[in-house]
Image 1 (cartoon, rainbow, N blue to C red):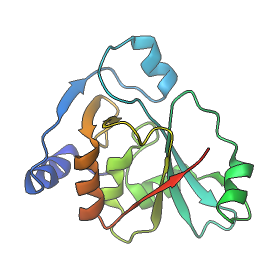
Image 2: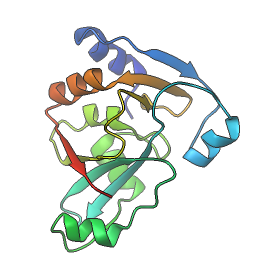
Image 3: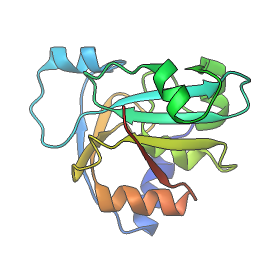
Amino acid sequence: MSDIAFLEKVFSELAIDCEKISHPPLHTAVEADRLLLERPGTRLKNLFLRDNYGKRHFLLITSPNKQVDLKALSKSQGLSRLGFASNERLAKYLAVKPGCVSMLALLNDAENAVQLWVDDAIWQSDLFHCHPFDNTQTWLMQKNDLLKVFEYSNHSVELVSL
């Protein structure tokens, strides 16, 4: 699994600075809600998906309270069927454990096997909550800094309507 030191090295190279918040381990948005932490920015739900054949992988970013209709999303993206990827696929493609997924994990996808989908309803924000490969911290990331990370990792944002 990747570590925070690697992430901090990349941030230094890209001249990215962000606020870092430590907290007890959070595996889901519901667990984060229980802490009642007040912090600026947009909270996120990160879903690691795969196509019906397991050949294509997607990281879907949306609002924590949004219910995602995978059947409708599959149809809108021209795919036969989407499902949740296994923990083994998560480790293989994004090198993080369940509960530690965020857009920052795309830095671990050197082969560009994972496509980034972001809910267009949340991409209007300028500040986003991201786990730094670890669910005991949340880093508050500016949108323009995330775009630097995506460029560095050779990923792009595809906006989707959910």
